[in-house]
Image (cartoon, rainbow, N blue to C red; front, side, top):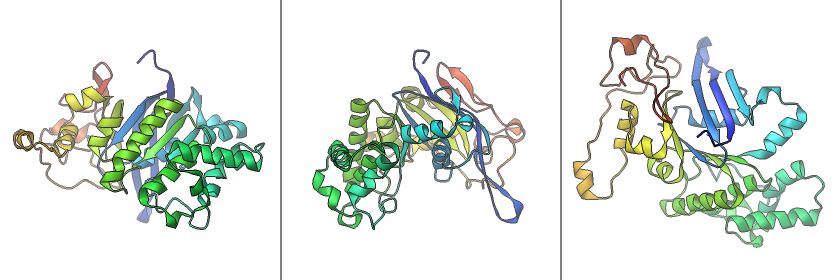
Length: 320
């Protein structure tokens, strides 16, 4: 990946939240990765593993507890007011719930134009309307939708509005936070194909957060597997899905439904014992040691580091 331009360089990111009784929720704990310009960087893992928190911290929705986020080689914490405004324009987010992220009191046209009034103040009213109609066209909707309200739309149409709102300010990078999770299966493929087409047409970079492993495999160039706030495996699509190394990754991928009955019969399912520990009281050493069939005494005492086992393929495991 030496020829790829690094858009985001995240180093030892931590995001902690206070909890009752003076305790701390370690939602993201010492996470490092890079996102290259023009790629789709997938992030997968069970619910509560910190996927969404990583995305929101990346965009500045949360102030990072510790660590460093570099955007185009510059630390986001050193941004002045102009830098921060440009950053908020260039980095957008598509939210998970298309029913909760649209203001029911605002027309679709007003929702999509909101970012334009902030970042393109010189546009006339007519120019804003033309821009709104243009981005509605990008997502397969006509200009008639600008006068409608969210309650008049289906779930798939609402998600398209969420995508149009993100596209309106002409961003370079979009965090797609489980953008298909709340949609019917028949609509999911349409939205993913739409995102893929827009990426090719507009040169976008995505962070695609999902627990749908099949969809992440379809859309992503590189993938990070998270468990309890940490990245346990990171690599290219082919190496992660074709040759998973971490015991958690193997168990996670073994749960992907197999439509072919023959392959489903011969497929080896990995069953994990026990429950996911709480991020308030994570195990010492490797966080996966309480559920891992390979765990040793070293795993219970020492936290493994993410190390490269083959070109562009990283694993955090003492046993590999």
